[in-house]
Length: 159
Image (cartoon, rainbow, N blue to C red; front, side, top):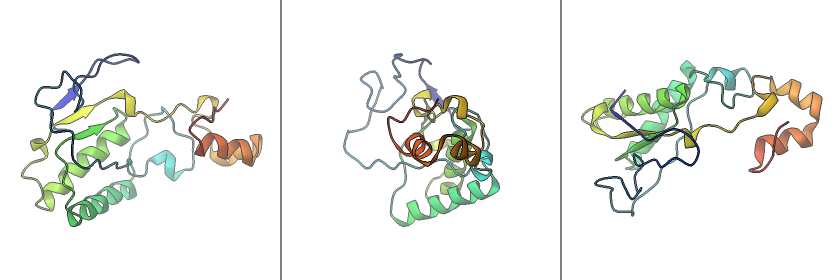
């Protein structure tokens, strides 16, 4: 993986490795384009299991999704200057694959040429007791309304 700039871990801790933080030396001009890329399909996504904070790897299909995202980004002229990822393996592998794909497409000279910041602040939400449970079982046990509230709303709180 390219060199990682990681801030101190834990809620409330400053994360000077992130772009735009007052302590980040050489922070770029605040103007620009933010591209948000979700991790590629994980093994738990493929199995329809609530993943949350479980550290699931990316599937081969997920890696192909990242390759396609890289092609689309390059086609749109969106080549990153900095990558920020969570420490979850699915996110780190997605970031690594994105950089490799950008090199393969000629958009970057080297996967090590961009700074990569890792922050827990990008971790997926905690699904509580639903973590690791198949979504079909959760839906059957708690009902459609609760299921979709937990899955699709910002403030839905799983049990």
